[in-house]
Length: 352
Image 1 (cartoon, rainbow, N blue to C red):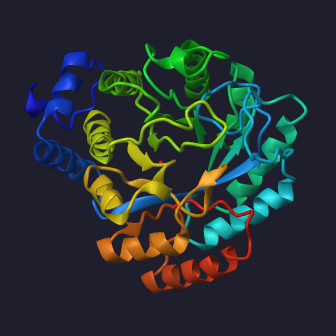
Image 2 (cartoon, rainbow, N blue to C red):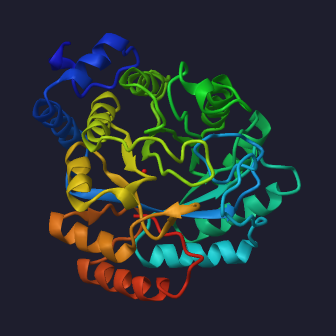
Image 3 (tube, helix red, strand yellow):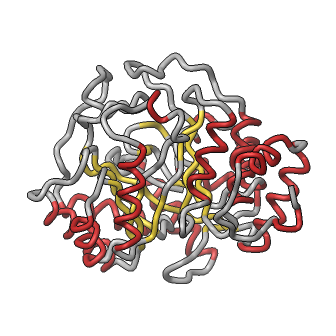
């Protein structure tokens, strides 16, 4: 492939080019990914978000990786939509520890008309705090997308999960095109897109390349690209899947960075199972966004204290998008929030 084009935003990636990236010697791939990363971002800053499950379980979809699916028997307790003030309370705590974006997820196929007013209030309340807002609520039509945009929603998360070819092996209750249609509705409404996928579901490297091609070749690349590592949950069809090779995961991060040079590439689900060295490699490969805290919707995530220590060891600072604070103020706020978080199990902190 033509290495002189690396770092350019392109929408015409072809399979053989992406495969050539995956086939590179590991050190060469990381060198090119880090070079592209430095052209577009501060290499020592990571965007920090917080993720909260505002409605948990009983989802009608049959995604084989998901403990929230009503099709599988897991230990997950089902919960109704959280009250608005409870959500805003968690958003305030998220801001205290330095999160610049508050993400809210609901286990729905699509939001209902009766729930939309509460969702709108959540968006408006978080925006009033000066934070960016993100939601993942399932499929959206054009009217729903417009309503969320008018409320001030900044990002909408809707992952492609995998390649079009492998998609039918993990989900049957909605099509790949359904996902593309939702992303198109979100774009037309003027919101930013958060979309990525999951590794470790039994897909091939060709499928990983296919997923990245779908994302990179969109008319406008997603502003945020979460790369998840499968969390194998007992009771789901993928509970016994083989562990993903960490090197394969890092390769995918690096290829995503090269193909989508201006997007934030996020370490999302599966970070609990990554040691510090693997996370450090992921940052070097171009990951520059993480969720901070104990949970990602329903699965474990490293504690904020562990993330703070890793950031210190690596010389990484949280990316600041809202108010600017001194390093001492950020440190004090983070420590205070960590202490209070230990007694508040409802807080899903985010350090994708």
